[in-house]
Image: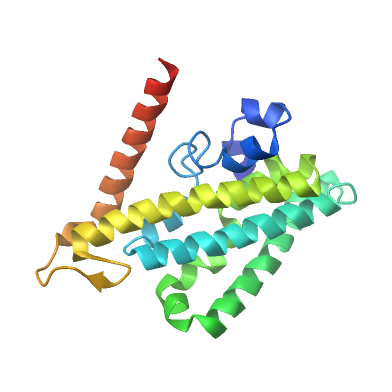
Length: 212
C-alpha cells in the first residue's frame, strides 16, 4: 500500500491555502509526526540527541522541497500507471545528493544517522506529500508545502531529541551541563516511545483546547 493511502484528505488539501497557511500548517495542525503520525521510524531511531535530530530533519526537509518541486514539474507528463515508481526515482535522486554531501562534509553526523539517510526514500512523509500535494499543485506551492512539512518534521525531531538528550545524558547538542549521569532509559528505545507518546498527548490536548 502506498504511503499516500495512509493520509486522509484534509480540509487544507481540498481548498486553496494562502502562502502563510501553506507554510505553517505542518508545524502544529498537520505536523507529520505529532498529528499525522508519519515518519515514526526515523523519529524514534535517530533522536537520541538533538544534533542527530536536527541533522535528520534538515536532510528530510531538503528532499521534501526538491522532490516536491521536481514532481510538480513533471506531473503532467508522467503516466498514472507509473507515477509512484517515478516519484520514488525522483526522491531517490535527491536522497543520493544529500547522502553524498553529508558523507563529504559532515562525516561524523553521517556515521551517526547511518541507514536512516537512504531510508528517506521510503519515508511516508516524502512520498505522501508527493502524491497528495505536489502532483496536484504548482511548483511554488509545492515548494512551500515541502518546506512547511519539513519544518514541522524537524521541529518534532528536535523536541524529541532535546528531551531525550537532556534527560538521558544531561547535555544538549553535546554540551554537558552536569557531571552526573542522566536517566539511561531516555537514551534507549523505550525512552523514545515514552517521550513521543507524551508529546502526542500534549499535542492532542492543545488541539482539543483550541476547539473549545
